[in-house]
Image (cartoon, rainbow, N blue to C red; front, side):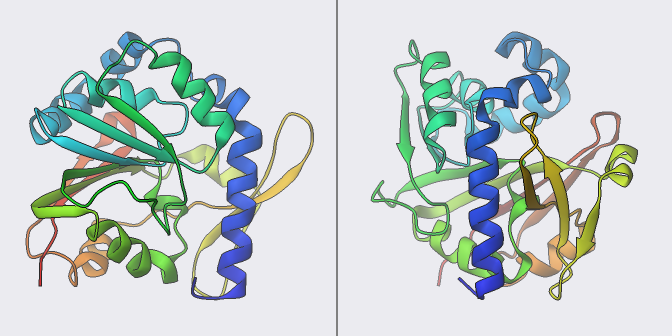
Length: 230
């Protein structure tokens, strides 16, 4: 990790999302996979061709909402998360999916899961990576991918309600939110909102082929790129 500050923030976020797991689906207005796919239909339809019949590595799968959508289309989904509580909830949702493997692991030090994946996927993860740690994360993820593999990162655009939460900017220009769970426990959570230019500049060392999508009606952006192999 790049600094003690980054490590502390990552530890805080890990604790936050583990504690939040039991409330996560409520916060995200998740009712069922069918409802989620209908709500996010333009995004699902854009993602589907990239993962069809592919071996997919999902980072920060959380409670398994996107894992379900991926597994309906992919050959195999290996879904990794550091929260045991979130994985427990995901396991219940995915009990009848036979092409899914759930693994407990750190996204910055991925477990031994093979190195020939065809697609890397992560939803609502990029915004939580400390900016100084993005190269380290991408290098580790790239080591798990096969030749010609693509990466798909989907995340939130800035919404007005983010203006109402207390936050500060750290020395690396990370936007750090101060959040509380229903039990009152406070946590510091990085929530960055990169624009297209920032994403392209960040990814230029990792890919020559970067596609950017905006889903304005859903307050979402997505970037798709092919990993450059040395």
